[in-house]
Image (cartoon, rainbow, N blue to C red):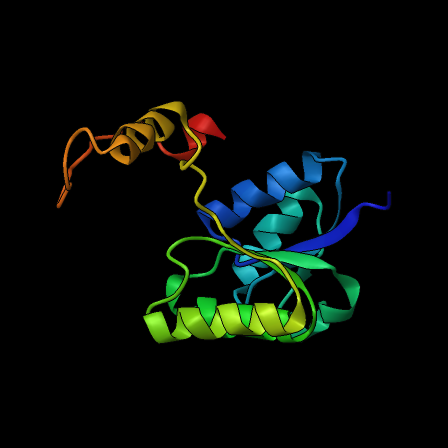
Length: 159
C-alpha cells in the first residue's frame, strides 16, 4: 500500500509534535508544513528538514490528507478548504468555535465522502474507558455533572 501524502497545517507546539511523529511513521509520505509565519516555516525546515509552505493552496495537489494544528479560530476555514478539495482531515480540538461551523465541517466531509477526525487523543485511555463503562451501567443513577483531574506534563512528556 502506498503511504498517504500528508502535511501539517500550523507549526506551533502541537504542529511540531505532529510533524515529528508523522516523519517517523512509515505510513505517511510527509509533504511539508504550511504556516503563514516565515519564522515557523524556517523552524520546521531547520528542525525536521521539511518543506515549508506559506499558503494552503500550494500543497492541495500534493497531499491526500492533513493535520490541522492552527489556532482554533482558523479550524473551520482551513478544514473546509481541505475537505472541499477532497482531503481527509485530522483537526486538533476544539473542532471549531461555533456549533454551526462544526456542523458545516461535518456536512462537507459527508458530502465529499472524506474522513474528518477530531484529535481526541485521551478518549481511549484506560481510566476514561473505565469511567465511561461505569457511567453506562446506570448504577450511579442519572449523572448530571462530574469533575475529573488528569495531570500530565503536556505533549512534551507523552508524545
